[in-house]
Image (cartoon, rainbow, N blue to C red):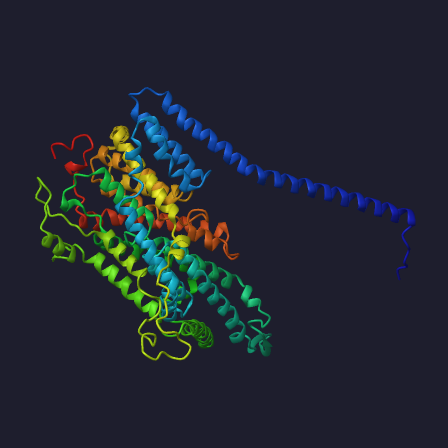
Length: 627
């Protein structure tokens, strides 16, 4: 039996003094750490300011110090200055987009009028009109109804739920901003995850009889195979599935933008740079419009979203994918019943959210009709196998280009979207014939009530990403500066040693390089900077310029690894379930597979559909006079 011996008072005081000194040392360490952290945080803007000042100083002084004849070197200095500020984001991307308009006239590459005229053109109107239509769809809530309708059909099983989430985002991002689509889908996916947590508690809270055998004697005991306190909810499989379901949203958004010409800004950068660089292209070779892009990019985008779904299922829902492939839900009858009950409950939750939307309202019906009209008019404006409505209008106007005799098309893709956008500012957001224009309106309804419109100027000013338009303008100015200064020809000469190399290998290298670059820089800025280089490379190795340009442009949308790569990635990373390691683990596999699929597509059906065989004479930057 142990006896208690009190601690001497001297020892007790010494212990207290030592504890007090330790606490003081710990407090001092914490205070120093906190002060150091604050100093680092406050130093970041200072470092950015100094870096910006140095880059701008060199970007102005170095070109002016060069000889007047070195126009290529002066243009290269301006482009490198813009590229550094774009990639580091030392100042906002939109502000950096104005630099070419300031520096090119300063170093004598372009006049001020030539530089400023590049900032708003036909492609800018096309993109702005697309923004307006997407904002109208978002304002009336039509996109949410479409997403819930797709999920209610496919929301049965982990693999199918991932497919439904990816498909919803994929479809909507073809016509809406990728970031806006992701921001809309994340609350829906979050509600589904919460429903799964609730249904796991309600369905799996049961006690079953499990038989054990000991020394040849069977013993029956009660075992709670799935604990009722929610331990199952924090299991690795559930957390793993939540990560895959959340990642399906940004992947679907990035891939969906590839399918249409207006789906993502890099696609329109390609169209503008191509048309500005090659102004003497015959009508039969002007293949970049909404219809032709959709015909070759939609199948590629569909394959890529399928690849993304398979990758996510293999990593995060392997068992569910195996059950789906083998056409069974679970191995045993009891487990199968549990799975059916669980996913019936989830599907019921999704349908309940859909029913809460009620019947389609007037603005949703109008927006659906206008969006469908817009897509159909884009697809059938100029068709090869019959006269589209654009061709009929051109024949009726009966005007041809002097010298060539080619018919002039007055109505282009931008006209269609601008016309539809104007209707959004005219049509009211409520049915004007529903009891308000009658002689005796219903009680509480004033006669001749003034309605709001489907889209208001306040909504446009707040939600339109104007910075994208100025970034694109800076890119157009850079492309024109490369051409005027002769920098494009100089770059092409440096790549002449690749003339005997395989074009597929070169396309593979280009695709991989762009996919890596866009992880660290804006995809719009990356495409803007690289397309003039790819044109010069095509001229050096004598391949059709669209072959490498399309490969590089599509690869700019394949940013899956880092949260800072795209807006959708950043939104998903803001949730606690996703870590950087998770994005890198899945993103590396996605990047490799998608690069291979993209190069395979551009080297096969895209190559034949757009007739990219050979090197056309109008693409020769050295001599286009004798074309």
